[in-house]
View 1 (tube, helix red, strand yellow):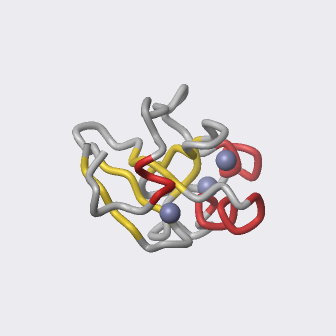
View 2 (cartoon, helix red, strand yellow):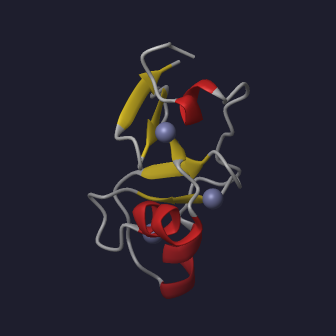
Length: 89
Ligand SMILES: [Zn+2]
Ligand SMILES: [Zn+2]
Ligand SMILES: [Zn+2]
């Protein structure tokens, strides 16, 4: 991972990918989402900040899991919430 990224991103050796292309939390409440993100700590796939429920941000705040990866096809990047750090891989 790039040296410019934060320690959380640099610590990731294998990027976790979405098991299913859906937001786990939106599925429970039958909500819609815009983009999907996968938590790099626990592998949960949740919706982005453009989505009405912003489940990925809420998950990061509630659990302290800092880094997500985009789960969108063709996108290869990581983002760390506490450090506001971004890295392509
Ligand atoms: Zn970080
Ligand atoms: Zn969601
Ligand atoms: Zn998580």
